[in-house]
Length: 255
Image (cartoon, rainbow, N blue to C red; front, side, top):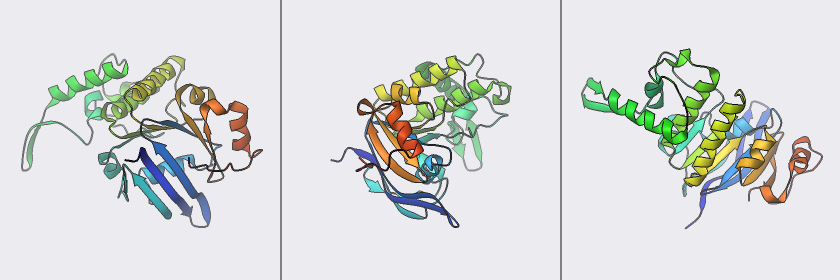
């Protein structure tokens, strides 16, 4: 049985005449944490948007959990087992923390035709359990999200992803706008995912964070994957050389 959880072959995205992503061959193995790095506009977020079906690919194939997939949209990708933290957090400002954690997957006491009754106590209890598991500290989970700091909002989004993680987690710059303490909190959540054996793709500009958290580093440049580097076999200078083009594409970059 294959240990590959995600593979893309020739994944390509064009916007008119602009090739934002070109022939991306990528492999992620079960339990593996991989960082995707590159300069602004290198194709990192475009790659994630194709995998999670936020956008539809122009060409190529995506294989997930042993089969080729063509998700119709991000909800279908999530239902298939891909949990994602995007740079835009997709939180509902007027709802409290439990309602946001269970947004789109609410628990009901009963559902009968057009009539239904939310099980708010069960959602609140499971939210507190999820926050405890991920060590996210929210003083009052009944507060609307709009009353929380940017760091708290980000932590809620990440806690939601970690709580429901099943087959794959993708995080797109999860600590970009966070302070030192909140960044440490998120990094501990990522370590917890590793301990649980949940594979992850981490997009980050923070090379210190990358070397602390992942097994392998995949470098994008101008819409192409130019290197796939084992963490213990490379260093920051080497990674920067690929990002800036001082070093050209490496062999076997999908491995």
